[in-house]
Length: 129
Image (tube, rainbow, N blue to C red; front, side, top):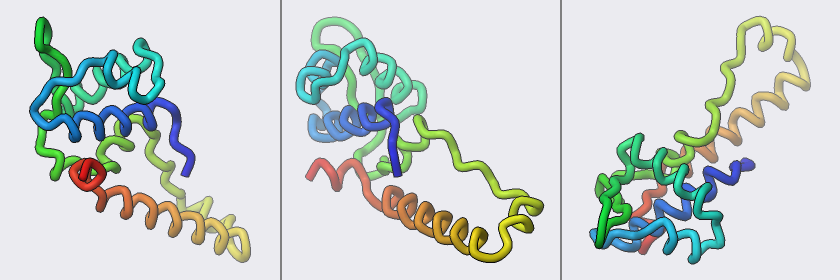
């Protein structure tokens, strides 16, 4: 599975927020720690806030925190925000994929499901521990 940069940045940020617990973490801190451009990271964090994974607070002592316990947020939750959902296979496409091509597609689909299930079984708390 090839994850885009925004997804990787979001995963770094989410794990960093899990490591911080209730302490706020700034965009600058996360960006410096992982070598991520601040302007890109800011957009990623905004998406995490809009989705309910993170919360933001302004002012002195402000920053980002997880909005939910790290034990309830999975890697797949974060990935789903930034990666397009796989296109469903239509019946006509399945019919065209008879034989070896269909078996190969089936293998790729099975691998994709296994990867997704693995990501869904790993929480931010697990990664932070």
